[in-house]
Image 1 (cartoon, helix red, strand yellow):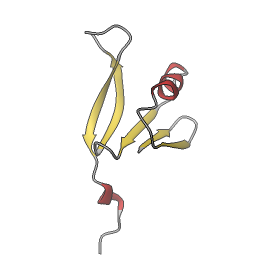
Image 2: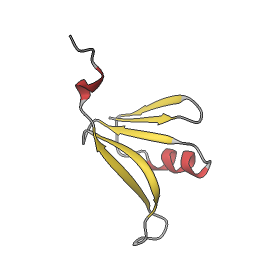
Image 3: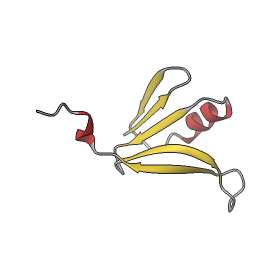
Length: 74
């Protein structure tokens, strides 16, 4: 599952299929600040600009995501 957090619009979206590229591109093209959490790869992805190798392709910073990182600690 992909969870897209749109910080600009203060909305969250969940996608259970493949990478939601058209929705993500739409948000980024509109200047929205987004974060993508992938439960498939356990990563948090933040857009980092455009690729210098492939024209028009976005680059992402990735951070490790642990599903239990938000649980309360006893």
